[in-house]
Amino acid sequence: MDSQLLILASASPRRQELLSSAGISFEVLPSEVDEEFQEGETPEEYVARLARRKAEKAGEKHRDRWALAADTVVVIDGRILGKPGGRQEAKEMLGMLSDQEHRVITGFCLFRGDSGKSREGTITTRVRFKNLSSREIDGYLDTGEPFDKAGAYAIQGKAAFMVKEIRGSYTNVVGLPLTEVIEALQELGAVDDVRKA
Image 1 (cartoon, one colour):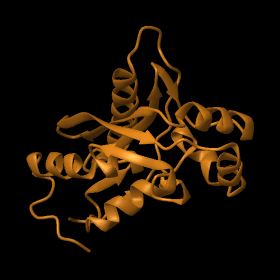
Image 2 (spheres, rainbow, N blue to C red):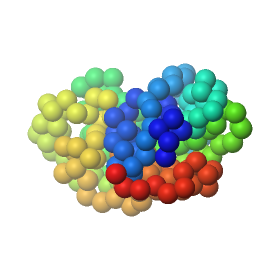
Image 3 (cartoon, rainbow, N blue to C red):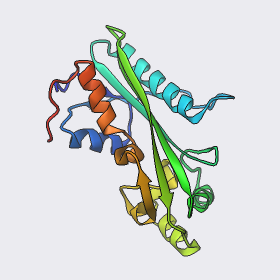
Image 4 (cartoon, rainbow, N blue to C red):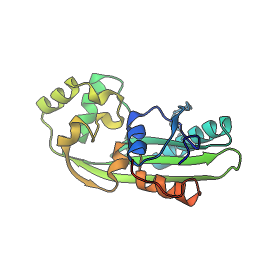
């Protein structure tokens, strides 16, 4: 893929690592939008709307290039868990997830301004945590890892020991459903053959 072709409208290092691992060249140009939840909106509608707005904003600025945006949330018992505001909130989130199944939902959107073409999708993965002791939670919080992660954990990091079961896309839990994104790029003709780096 031409390095001028894809804009990643996200500052997420995890999304950057996933795209790089697939051999896709991209430029990081984060796109900021209002992330307020709208009344009556489902988690799927929420992440899809944010991804679409971010991709369109980036794609309108750079009209001759594809823009990719994504947004991920953790959902348990109908409650959306975004990034924790501090240690206490992160501790509460991990306590909620302990010994329970939750959903990780990512909305993604590819958009090109000059043609108006787009593809979007919403992917859900089910994750079950082991029963976490207070000591395990505090130890994980002490690493500093949870504080910029939806749901206060990173499955690809030090939280791997917490995950008892996963059903669905692993890369979705990391932050980008790579299979579906690459398929969308191929359907759009944005990439002919994605080779491993």
